[in-house]
Image 1 (cartoon, rainbow, N blue to C red):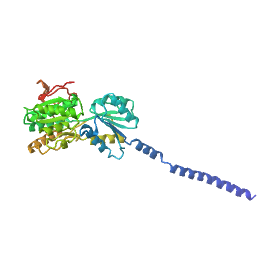
Image 2 (cartoon, helix red, strand yellow):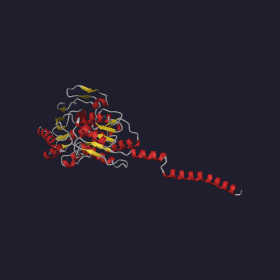
Image 3 (spheres, one colour):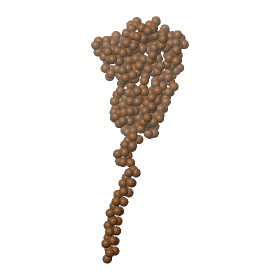
Image 4 (tube, rainbow, N blue to C red):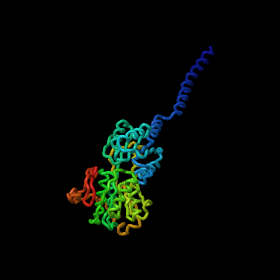
Length: 379
């Protein structure tokens, strides 16, 4: 009879112990796995790593347009969450570029930069099939929910470089080696000419088209043809330093473009309108990483330091440097706009009225030459 109460006590004790042991084991199992919130945050951090891809129209060693973009790409990679990026050089514009852009998408890139105007339609087409990837197209005007555009107001330092050219020419003949007659290039020629004429109304700007972004031989021939007709200052909208080298060889002055190319023409170099892509590429990578990116059309200028005028060479007199610096500060503050009227086209017709400033839409679609330009907009 005494054994029954003892057995009952043992059964009860075991009943109380087992649930306690089971709860302890469950607690230990739970603590060894990440909490749901921690796991989700970890997944998000992994998802937001930036794997960027770049499509270039020229070689990174061109010392010009592609070189400047590649410097910006490298600056962006300083960010801890940006993986080593991919770049593909010398990709032809047009339909063929779609295959290359799509290749980057298939290889897991979540931020793709297409860095020339002729990639616009291909970028839009590939983006339609890859809604989870952010695409940024340079210099174009077409956007989508996952496609933005970006460019710089290069016409601002172009205008300033025109002031330098107008002050430095002795023959009042300035040569301009230009790639293609698209609004970007036309706008630069016009801004440069307006800068020239603001200080030297007698000077003319002669334009020769090359129909190429990067072909040193063709660019050199174009530069020589301008020197042959008496130009004593050259400038360019080209990617190779051939125009620089032509001026150096023949004792003329030259104004570069894209990057500071003075090493190619140490005696001829005056200054150069240049690009600083790093700050913009860093901003875009940060936005994609943080989930704050949205499609927009970015058009930064000297105020944002995307574009600027390179340091003057010692050939530029101090008073010219001071004048250009003053005008540059006025552009940054908004008190000077290169395309403020009255402005006439080649035929003498007023295209921007007195007291008016050309709106961005007109600048982006510019298809005429201003008074003072010698040349035609041939297609």
